[in-house]
Length: 244
Image 1: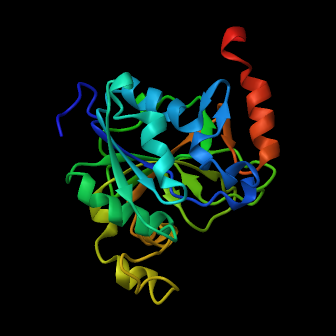
Image 2: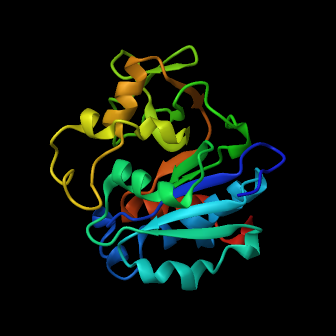
């Protein structure tokens, strides 16, 4: 993969989820392909990634996987090269999905973003390489996650502390974060499957305990598009392309 002028050159978009809370909308359309503001959610990400210099984007897919390539093509319309990480069924969760996608990435740090969020965060603000194993973007807690996820102590992210913020689903990761993953996640269901299925959060918390996760607070717009109601509100806020 070729390097970009800004230092960001590769990214992973998590797009494999079942979208169960979005039904019936996701019965026939995977959640990242649902439209808000005149374009699919995943396209907002592709545009931002291209704008910050990324050229190679891996998209992990599972539910309705066959719909992505016809909708997005090869990425050339955004100046990108799209690569597909097919997970099969069921999806591999965030940790298993990232591990499975490493075969499409090189050993450089990469941006990873959840395919079912919308934000005005500028991906160019992300460091080309985290000082530790990961760099996370945190946002103010939405109504559906009042307790937050992680806390910021200066530029460091802590797992257990007061005044927690919500993880935005945007980060920069080193592949080394996944080293020793089996010992960290333990005997959770799915971990012995092939390919293994497990969450990323335990690996992040273990890295936080070692002081290996940095972060920042984004105070701008952000939406976890987790329900049809949130999608409708986002779409109304963004308006049609003709009104923007």
